[in-house]
Each structure stands twice: as structure tokens, then as C-alpha cells.
Image (tube, rainbow, N blue to C red; front, side, top):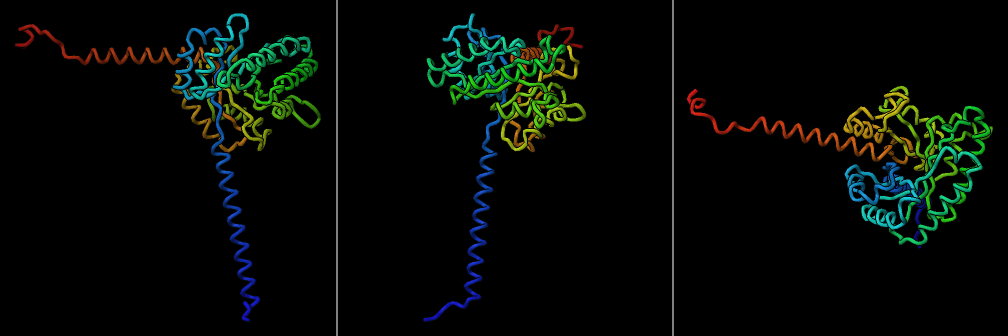
Length: 334
């Protein structure tokens, strides 16, 4: 019986092992590419005037679609907006692949004395979701507390910070009574400067607690010193390889903090250009989860005024181009 020489057998084994290694690396690279490439990017806006969903729900969602928005942080108004209005709005949003998060918050929620109010808000969402059909439910709970706005922040920052952190743990704990609900929060871009412990900043601690944070990186330019990219990069670096944890927020509301903190005076075309730059530059951060525009009402008003001005200019130009009719005989002779 003939046998294969040992040297040839060795070569075949090596070739087989290399092929297996190459195949494994190819499959792994493909899976990683699909994993990252298919990751949905959040494109959000805040809607504070809740009564609009009953009055102009269709217009809100059409605007969202037109501007590629796929998530709305919708403020909860338990007194003036009935559950039926939320159900109708969210169902229509779901049909357009737009998710809706229940938005709540107040600087007073920084105090532990407000825990009953916080728990009541979250419980309302749980009760609502249990009674609603699947396509009528809130996707998550989003809080905007901003402890730095509370008067006590200047008097005793550390004490207020501790109370607020305790309340944020409560928000997570109460929200996750329904594991399907996501939980997120607005935070200022400088929160990485606040220590949560000897080894961790407050922003890093929050990123570990929440499904995502929405960074209020309010500037009207992306690149350059003190631009959106510059002031966001520190928290994005903190998040490291933790995927889709940081949404970058931009502002269109008038601000008393300076013209460079808002797109209030710029055309929406300029804002869209800056958003495009943002999306390109953020590709290197696996923690980048998308962007959010604050807020819907001002954004929609700006867009509508621009369309009206554009339409008026077009009408005026067309009117000037029309040939004059009914010329007099004298005019024709000349």
C-alpha cells in the first residue's frame, strides 16, 4: 500500500489550516461589516407642544419624513392630551417607521424630593403602553432634567449632583420594569468634566446606565475650534467602542448664550450642510448614534418661512418674464 510522503502531507495540512483561517477571517470581517453597516442611525427631534399631535399630527409626521427623522421625543402632557391622541399619533408614526419616545423632565427633578413625580411620569407610560396596541406604544423614555439650570447648582453643585444621579438611577430602574423600553437623557457636552467617582466621570457613568445620551452640543458649525465635533469628541472618546451610545444634539431655537450656539439665524440649507459634515466626520466613532434637532416647532417654522419666501420670489420672477399683452397700436409701430 502506497503512502503520501511526510513532507507532502505536512504541506497539505498547512494549506488546509491557512484556508480555514482565511475563511474564518473572511466570515468574521463580513459579519462585522454587516453589524456596523446595518446599525440604524437615530435622527431625532424634540416636540414640546404636545397638543399639536391632535391638531397637526399628519403635518408633523410629513415634516419628519421629509427631513428623514425617525425618532420623536414627544413631551407628555397628561392634563391636556388624552391617551387616544397619543395612540393615533404613534400608530401613524409607526406606519412611517418613526419611533416615539415619551419625553419628560424639569430641573426640579434633580432633587430627591421629586422622586414621586418622576415615578408617576414613568408609571403613566407603563400603564399607557400596557393598554395600547403594539404599534401604538412608546419606544422609550427620554428625560430632560438639566440639573445645572436649577438655582441650587450655583450654591451647592456637589449636593445637587448627587441627588440628580440618584434620580437618574431611579429613572433607569423604573423604566426597565418593562425591558422593551429604552431609556435616554439630554446632557450638556461638558458633563465629562464632572466626577462621578475617583475613576469615572458623570458622563461615562451615565453612558453605562442609559441606552443612549443626547449630547447638547449646541454650535452652528461642526468643524474647527469649539465646534460640534470638538466639544463632542471627549464624551465620544469616553464611550469608546460601546456602540451607538451618543446622539449629537443641534439647536435652532433663539439662544441667549450667543449666536454660535444655534442655527436660529442661518437658513436650514446651511444646517443641513453642517449635518452632512457631522455624519461624515462621526463615522470614525462607533459610539456615535446619530443626531437630534431642537426643536420641531422652530425648525418647522423656519422651513415654512423659507419655502414661502422661495415661492414668492419664483412667482415674482415668472410675472416679470411674462410678455406684455395688449400693446397699443402706437407701441407696436415703435
